[in-house]
Image (cartoon, rainbow over all chains, first blue to last red; front, top):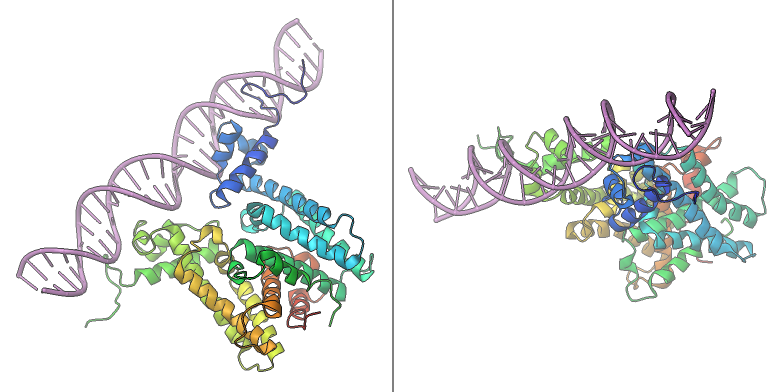
Length: 205
Length: 205
DNA sequence: GGTGTATCTTTACATTGGCAAGATGCACAG
DNA sequence: CTGTGCATCTTGCCAATGTAAAGATACACC
């Protein structure tokens, strides 16, 4: 019975690359980027401590691959949030909510995805995933401004930078615990988020 | 000749705590937060590798103390930027420029200051320094809205969150290299920054 | 002048990332 | 079917790190 990708006994794991990525995601979620350990990933995948080197070369390589997956999940979160919303302004704001939702759902992955000091920023897979995620935001901005093919400059570029900065900054501050002291008494994080969301997709002054 | 804080020969360094902080800042600037090492700090300060434990307890303790200093420098950068500017809106925008300027001048310190996963976020000194830095921004918002004593809620709170998020997000994205691809051809980072700055201090929709 | 104590050193140990050499078994040619 | 090449994985090893424990030193205070 030849299974295509079977679990083997000792050697030739079958799909060790995937197993290591899954283990790495668990380790990252549990211990954070500071407590992340290559050997712990190998232990959870049931292989020796040197096995990951063959698939990722380096701990940086593994983290970079994980970060690329993080960008894909971020893009998916934005796509999911905007599904079925046609009004351009509301569509952009839904995407913004999807961005923050990803950060709140996967805080450690969000941190890793944007902490280039531990990643190989030149990795083409990483760059492609990052570009695809940002393209989601850019498309919404273009739709709102009615400029599907215009070069990215002037008002268009300013609007994209502003929207992106504000959702990213809010997400980051929230994860690093610098927002909590503002939510005392009133509405919680969601109310604060809506206040931020209201500032994007506005016409320029 | 009794000097108050002299450089001693071997034991009793004099002001080892300060010397370790200085060394740690160099190590952080050179190797980043990922390559930061307690032993390297001790080497540069000319003491044994176990000496830092007495002053900071832990590598987390040293990084937390460094992060608190980072907040002080951030606050100083904002104060310096707003000096002599009286118009409330321009004052707020000058403070925003000071925020980004700190991030650009001290990228590694900016990363450390906001990477709570490697810090002791409950440290009172750290929290006080963070609060003092954010108070600078809050005061400018209050001045702009003419509400020096109002409780921080509603429009006031939304404006603060929006301003803070946008300058922080822009700084973070810039440092992590996700802004470079938008500056091709036009104006560079400063032009992009001015576009972001223009979005803060506006009346609510 | 003597003693207590904070400061710093020495020593030791477990853990980690990375390298090199060896073991294993799949793929593919004949 | 058989044998060879090679990717995959393991074992063994090393230097570096963080932390703890025990010892050395010199300042402060009585």
